[in-house]
Image 1: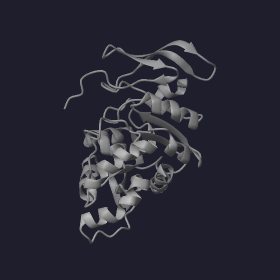
Image 2: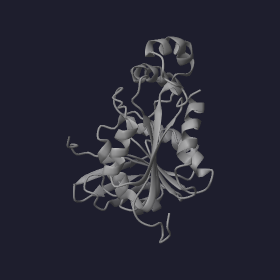
Image 3: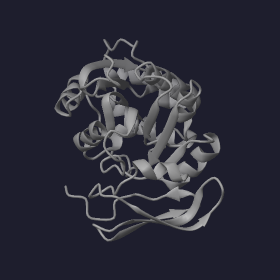
Image 4: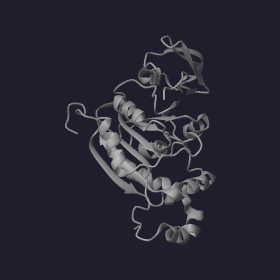
Length: 61
Length: 222
C-alpha cells in the first residue's frame, strides 16, 4: 500500500485513527508493517504490501 | 465465458457511476471491474476478504490500492469516495443493510452507489447449482462462506437502498433479463440445460440497483 491510502483508512470496528508502523518499505509503497488501533488495542498487519483490515472482534449478529 | 458475463454486468454498472472519480469496489475479486473503471481515468480502491484475490488484482490494476476487509465493517473514513461499486458480492452478505449504511457513510455527499446482485425469480432454484459449476470458471470470486447467497427482488432492493438513505434509486435487470418466463420452470430448465452447462454464469439473473447519497457534489447539482 502507498502511504496516501492511510489518509482514508480507519479501524473497521471503532472507526478510530490507525497508527502506522513500518518495518519494510520501498520508494513506492509500504511492504510490511502494522496499522494499530489504540482504541481497540488491535494491530492490523500489512503483509507483502496488502493491509489486512478484516475485523478482529466478534461481529454482532 | 465468465469474462463475457462479467463484461456484460460491469458495462451496466459503469453506466450508473460517475467516470473518472474516486471509486471503492466492494468484493473487488481479481480487479476486473476496477481495471475497466480505470480506463476512463479516476482512482480506485479495491476491498476483498481474500488475500489471494487481491494479489491477482494488484497484478491487473497497477497503481490502484487494495485492502483486505469486509463490506459490513468498512475500514475507511466518512466521505472518502465519489462512487461505490459492488458486483455480485452483495448476494453473499449476511447483513446487507449494514453494508449499505457503511457505503452511505463512506460516500461523499452526492456520491453514487451501484450494486449488482442475484435476483429472486422463477429460475432461482437453478442458480445455486449454476454457481457451483460457476466456480470452475472463476466467476464466483467473492469468497464469502459456502453458497450462502441471498436472492433479492427489485422491491426488496429498493427498500434496502431507501432505508440506507439513498435517493434517485433505479433498478434494472441485467443478464438474461430478456427471457420471458411464461412456461413452467421445468420446461425451461430442460431446454436450457445444455446451454447452462456451458455458460452457467450467464443464467444467473441479476439486478442492478443504483442510488445517490443526498447532497451536492462539490456544490454542484448532481
